[in-house]
Image (cartoon, rainbow, N blue to C red; front, top):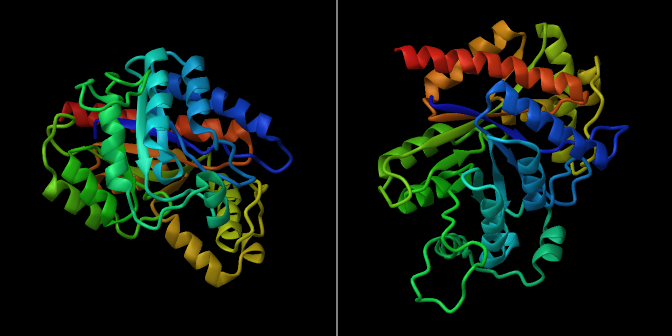
Length: 335
């Protein structure tokens, strides 16, 4: 493993506002930079009361302005919602303002419900143009060859690093074909992780962007001073995910000591399965669980994420994770 990074969904906790969530994102980003995280990514979601990062490019600029060295990016921009030129202009502007610090992860899903997707796109095309849109976007960020009458200004020549995000074999195959880095959304959809990484690594074609495959996997983290406290704090995310799966998205719930009473057993089984690529507990427990994931999947980079109702507890969780992952980097460097 070469790096560890952080994915922030800018959670809006019950009893708090979106302004609180955005303030919390900046505070967490500054803390993450101190802790040694390599990247700080924000994700595009729409029409979700518990997530405040809908205007993802705006948030990336705000976080980049509040930090100094850490890479800031999108994990990701849901490309079907946008014209490639608009994304190229946005991220070209960000890369011009913060050179060498901006990443652009691209997803194929809408990141919302279909009614909201229609409101975002206005004109929904029945065909899947994701591969063509990715290539068009990369071309806008590359050098001006004079072949196209349309240029992204700012954007042309910025060469913003583009990542393919996915949770299936589709993204793995596309990333390998285009010679791009690949990030797997194993923090909420781990079922095809092993197969997708194998396909990506085996079929990767070197490109001007990347000489050899580069894999990032995501994992949930909820760390605290004790296993019991961490399990209690994690109930907020379990509740939020269960409600989302049941069609009742809302703000991030307060933690509960009666999680079994809140979530029916069949739903809980689904939630636990979806969130199984994770580590929850004290530092010792999280060290063992993250170590098992890293040893098994051998990612080039691990991106951790986690939703905790109390902001201070969330910052502390990522601090514990950073201590563990810094130890791991030191150990790997020594071998």
